[in-house]
Length: 69
Image 1 (cartoon, rainbow, N blue to C red):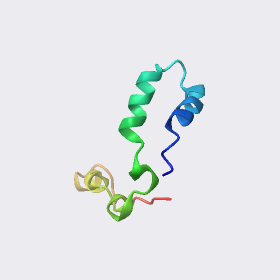
Image 2 (cartoon, helix red, strand yellow; image 1 turned 45 degrees about the vertical axis):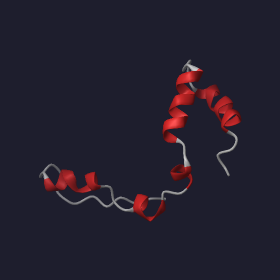
Image 3 (tube, helix red, strand yellow; image 1 turned 90 degrees about the vertical axis):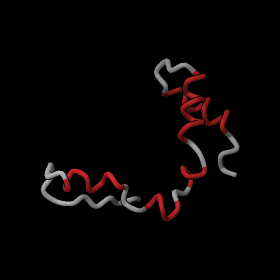
Image 4 (cartoon, rainbow, N blue to C red; image 1 turned 30 degrees about the vertical axis):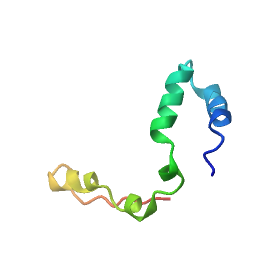
């Protein structure tokens, strides 16, 4: 699995963390880095429900199309 090197990846990322507490960084990684980080799957690639809310509320003039790269 490509998520097997958490400690090494966290050590690398901490170089850019601007004094972020390592335990907090590890907690963040635990919350947001997972199998869906590697592949959202078809449901993750569909437009999020919030994408059309601005248009539906009359805040923006046209619907929003979300593109995933």
